[in-house]
Image 1 (cartoon, rainbow, N blue to C red):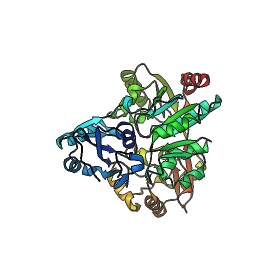
Image 2 (cartoon, rainbow, N blue to C red):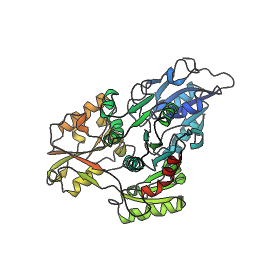
Image 3 (cartoon, rainbow, N blue to C red):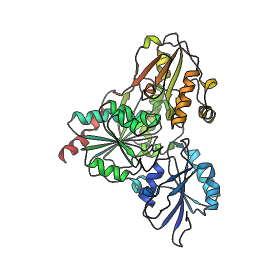
Length: 448
């Protein structure tokens, strides 16, 4: 692969996590002869390095594609590839950690660059509702589903576009459309993908995702009256929004700012305060004060997300293994989720610690995220990790498995133990409601 720059080319390395990094390349560098992107680095997601961004997606300037390296090789790559600019392109990173990365890059001799919303958002011909957050696990998907329901109730055609999760064959995943659960099977979706897509499909929606979001946008513009952007982590929308809803989780009250969550909070047209039913009054008050300080112009919608469970009587007094959404617990930093709340509410005998039973890469996950307590993150970024998750669940000595993941794990994992399923949706608390703040988009969509 010829990575030698011409005299006028700036040599670029993109730091990412298989999502924002590819989008930034596509919109800023793919057809730009002023730059030579020599590689990507990969973080946060296991087993996404040592791949190739394929020529079919990289474009005519990159006939051999672009290599993807482990982030641990960053310093070496800057030196050996004579990198002049490093573009940081992933989300849910503390400000302190972000500046450590900047220091690392600059110490190796390169510039450190953050590409902002204006240069990376694609304009759409149809109204766009952006649903983002200040942290992973704030409740974006339930709010997105509620917004879709509101829009459909007005007789509008809605397409949901999900933040990318291309963990498989990138060329085949360039543009993906999911309209039925069978589509997930056909695409060999990971547990992480299913967690985001399956609840929309169960609600009767259609979800688009992939790698090339300009192509995705052109397709959904012909299929929908309104586009709902269902964000990932705490990244901002890839499409220029008509309204930006940003979720804030009061359970994170008092923690330091995260990138780009603070950007989202500053940009928000509507701040959605979530989980008021499980947060303390002190946490809620702290978040309200923060919102008033950072973005007093935003409308504030207050919501609850009460978890519900089938067969709650099975929980009382039992030794339970709680399986929660993986990203919320890992780089989202949470120490519990809806499953733990339900187990406590219905007075489980104890939460069984899965760590002594963890198989394969799950051992590394627990070492990497030592804040995790007696609960199991549903890690499943590939077939091997799914098998390890299945083996771990089978080995845990418990009476009951509490499945608190957004998708039903029983569809992809064989479980011999009794199970219960936890679900959660969003409810308005007071005014304005989610319906109230959607009125402008509804009117615009009906007029166009």
